[in-house]
Length: 384
Image (cartoon, rainbow, N blue to C red):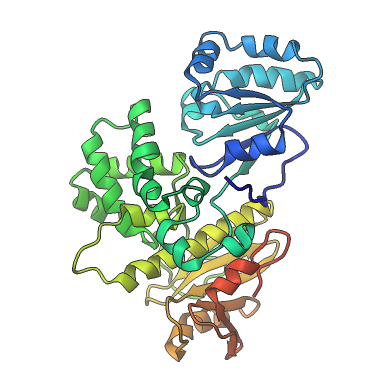
């Protein structure tokens, strides 16, 4: 696999590195810290060893007096190791710990705190367009997504098609998170229709024929596995009546498309439009995370139906972003942004489209979505 430089900057002190499976956490740590002591808890032998005797980690480190970095991969597989790590960090003379994981669920269930704030928390996301450079292909990204495991595969279509089976359902099955896997499989299909939409738990429950509380627990499982996120409504200084329900996004547009059933009644442009919106969202999440979580992400929707896809609010300012899967900009496409700008005149508004022209219409920047994604880098503010 070709190594692409990631935008994530490692902290100087111990840190957690969370991210969905396949986002390149292990590859990144091995490349960044080639001399580190590496504990791979996906290795059954090492996992059994530390589950039985977590204190043996301290003995292993003591045998390497010159060791400056220790990487523990998939820490949720043995959360009791955090007690040992905590003790070594408290002494102040130990190595820097890099603790990777694809879920904090088992850590919380084991009643182990995340080192009481002694370690920072970082997240690894799918590739950003600027990380791939010339290798970024918008059309291809909308088909298979940007999970590094998929991008690096010889047959990415096959890998993304089986991602859910390989990682999501396997992890759910291994941890016994649900009683009925057939119910959960139907839920995964049903929840794909909520990607990029206002979440209606009752409708999802009806579609997959389970109770509402069961669906809520399934959504929490996806959030704990870092596979989905709820996007809240922006309501600061609200001048209009707003809806209260959040939107839901899966973490990668390729994974969304692998879950989303398609039939003769589905329009290709409808699915690709939702995929494009999800692609922009995953880029905004990664940009904000690698920038130090200086902002919060929202959407805006009035009870009257006016909606702005994304609102970015925080130290970097106030931004409103609308995404349209069309090559040409029409006046009606700008209505919601204009309404938002009237309520928040200090905002910077932009419409992202699939065309090639960069325009400014009624003081709203309209720019090609691909251009926006390529220019989005954590070292700089939003390019709008």
